[in-house]
Amino acid sequence: MRLTDKVVLVTGSTTGIGEAIARRALAEGARVVLHGRNEQRGREIAAELGERAAFLAADLAQAAAAPPLVAGVVEAFGKLDAIVNNAAWVVRSDLASTDAALFDKVMATNVRAPLLLIKAALDELKKSKGCVLNIGSINAYTGESNLLAYSVSKGALMTLSRNLADALCYDQVRVNHFNVGWVLTPNEYKQKLADGLPEGWPDEIEPQFAPSGRIMKPEEIAAAAMYWISDESRPISGSVVELEQYPIIGRNPTKRGDD
Image 1 (cartoon, one colour):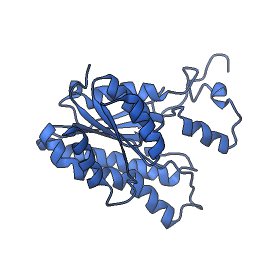
Image 2: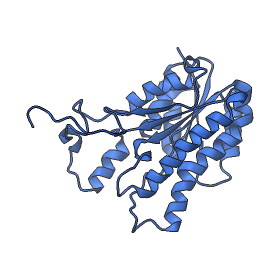
Image 3: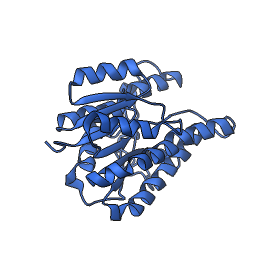
Image 4: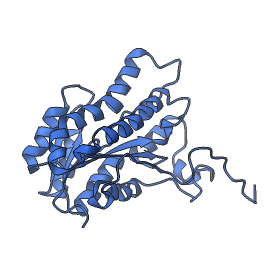
């Protein structure tokens, strides 16, 4: 098992990609601290996972939330080896609907929170020669017109990952980053219904968006994450990895023969 004796904090892990990463990390031998704002759901998952799992509630959009969260991890399991910054606010907004309050909340949740969590955890990560994996999005490169503030925040998160990888390299603290494509999470399913897609929409995805015939699963992102939070990836730091079914930059979808 690749994470034996490691202590891993996964933010936003009461559903979707974060939950999948937490479950896979536990299966790989880690002790896992789940995090979220849904206390009932978080405690149910932790109880299901057993004594090597714990849950801590925190609203990371609040600037003071990070130090108590790190302290809670250390109190639960004695150390901290890896942080997966997965928590994010995926909010629809375009130029007309993005006001100062919305923009500030998105940046506080999606960029400031990971920064402050890494800052609060730095002493522990130095002790363990630990690592950080930031979960970003392919929207960092351009994004959709109705994901303006979210896309900007993911671009900033990518820069944060690269900057801290450089700044912390002599402390033996590694920082890597995923830009994740389209993943079928429970929240994504509900959001697309709200956007006007019909029930069962994942079964009708156009091939240009899912050449494999389906969009990705949270468990597939979790499988990739295990390499990057384990010692197998040491000493690599500063990598930005795109997890999608096709090239992101400069893509021009190949015309199929039956089109």
